[in-house]
Image (cartoon, rainbow, N blue to C red):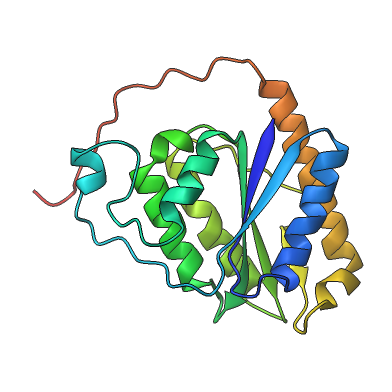
Length: 204
């Protein structure tokens, strides 16, 4: 089994990476493979609602000039997902929000039903709001949310400070243990059979 971790920070080895690395190390102790993919400093397009991913199929976004389709292919072979982001003005990094929105819309079948978690890393405040924003898309695709002993939050501003947040690092290890336990418990189990989706607009 494998978990894909997305580092939504432009700083490849910053505090968000440290938090996700702690999760990855604990997952591997639990016998679960882990891969961290970094957003980096390259631009990430936002969804333009063109619908091409739906009309042409293929579980790919029409824009193939950033990491979106690469990540969706990795998720096809993964059993769980964790998305980490620094907190900017009480919100996740805009780039990671654009990425997640395009991933789940264009390649939803690669994500649907798989356990997921968010991780917010901040200097001081706004982490709970950012974490909630990270989690909301997963709930639309029946992705079980993996919790920990506290909200999945780590504190740190300057490079390396996250490692000094003893409770935050412990929270990351507990998150990994819970992810591993859920994956083992559901391995080989059939997924629920859902009704055909019934979308309804309130303006007629």
